[in-house]
Image 1 (cartoon, rainbow, N blue to C red):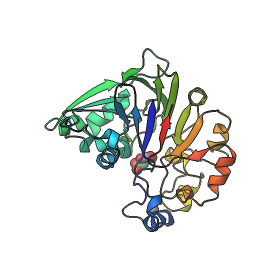
Image 2 (cartoon, rainbow, N blue to C red):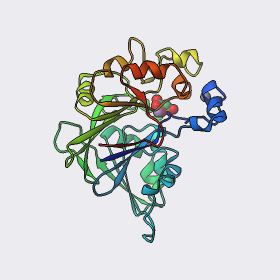
Image 3 (cartoon, rainbow, N blue to C red):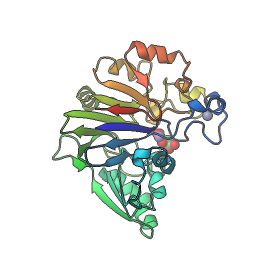
Length: 297
Ligand code: MLT
Ligand code: MN
Ligand code: ZN
């Protein structure tokens, strides 16, 4: 399989339209620091599918020649999207895909409920296109979904609900990691852009994969409070920080998998390629993902 990073920023992107913090100002001064909203494309033997549909999706598809409609083939008829959660930064792109004849969506049960009852996507989009909803099986239970010649399942991570559905009932699979396997090559990848808490299940999933794209929203626990974007800490916002006692870096240093941090918030100092945090990560064998990376597995 081939994995393509279409974007690597958290909600708002980098720069964020209404923000002049050092990270956003730096990205305006240095266009190479700009990051689109995090999303991946997976290419299997048959076709490709998206992991999350970001608000940047149309530009992301257009800027990658292999994701454009083939010359002479008219329009891309079907688009396939697998969702990690129901967050706006991962789902608003579904509205932008309405020119497709059909959108096939795989997600867990609470995510489906949020996207049909709270954010009524089926009602809104049905005059434009056909939405086909598929259950995304939980890893280790039954058969994974088969998409584009790859298999996909959800590793439940937490009951972190989107703010617009904060009053919904708890469920362990509100936020999940996607486990994508290539049965022919015997390889696998993990995509976990929102890790609210570490679990043994996640530990095993990372240990068993070749490449993992991991929540890198915040570098340290106090970052959201220190920068004034929230009264809550990183983990209270549903994102374990990279460094510090709660940090994911110390857990990920010896996994053997290629680890790439993604979903960077505009407050994260790692948005600056000269930041010293990059050296600290490199010493642990870890690194930050960039937009437009291609990983072959
Ligand atoms: C998150 O990653 O925590 C959310 O996307 C935040 C948001 O709703 O903006
Ligand atoms: Mn987000
Ligand atoms: Zn900013």
